[in-house]
Amino acid sequence: MHAKKPQVPPMHTLTAVEAFARLGTVWQAAEELGVTRSAISHRLAMLEEVLGFDVVHRSGKGICLTVRGKRYVQDVRKSLQLLAGAQDEGSSAPVDGVLRISSTPGFASMWLCNHIGSLHAEHPGLRLEILTSRDLAEVSGDAVDLFIAFGDGVWPQHVVRHLYDVEFQPMCSPALLSMLGGLTEPGDALRFPLLHLRSTNDWIQWLAASGIALPERTAGITFSDMMLVQCAAIAGQGIMMGDEVTCAAALASGQLVSPFAVRIRLPGGYYLVRDRRKPVSPAILAFTHWLDALIARILAELKGGRTV
Image (cartoon, rainbow, N blue to C red; front, side, top):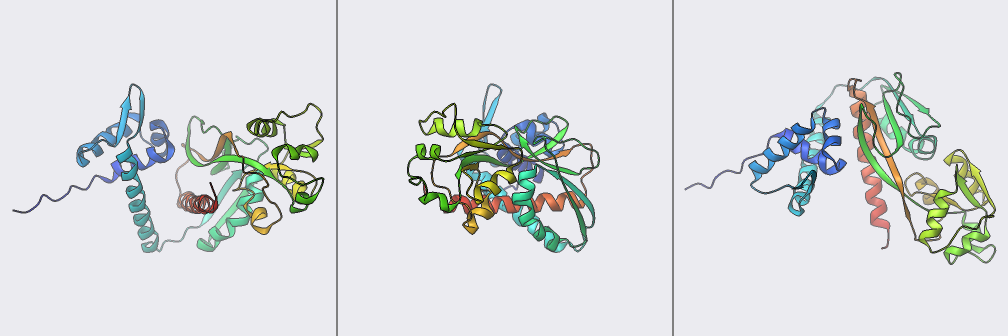
């Protein structure tokens, strides 16, 4: 007697559970896949019927992955990546045309400019135009194809793809480590000028997490652009708050060091955003795939290099 052949779940159920796991909500998964929320719920239920076990746990209006569901999604993601790679290798159609990307100034100057050449190497026929906006949450503009924005991820009428959450920590020039008694305890940072991006909120939050209150009169400098904050920190003008992704180049080169292990999670993250009325072009797909893969690799490298 032959064993029953395992049933392979339909592809649309696999993409649904992967999107839900990555984005965290049914509505975001629906937005990304261009379907209704009920369609996502139906696909998750269909997947469970095929598999024979619960992938998600439903409680009232809430829904989350089960422990077994989380393990299953890891395998699904690997399989989808293999399929995407096979598709890329089997496709000979070049990606060309113009792709206009709007980004926050700091992410564009400190991160995107350091990596964008690898996308051009993959698609030399693609003409890229990089724009910046002073509004970190800006996602409007008919001439723009994709937005890299910082915010809470809630942009109605848009397809939103989460890139990464931001954790800030103090960073400074290595020269400051031996000046004014050095930087051994968190409170030592108050002996130096504190460098701020638009407000003192980040420093107030970090000092509070370290059990310290920010004095009312503390020497410091406020900038309107993250790149200016980093330039001042590299020049030894004070201590900045930055994250490991956007400041990766300066940290890797030794221009900046992070003297303290305490991190704070900002109430927002970076997202790739597209007006859902705009058609998805091969250029948009190429950039999205490139950015997803690069961010995932960098985050994995950072996580692997941390000592917890």
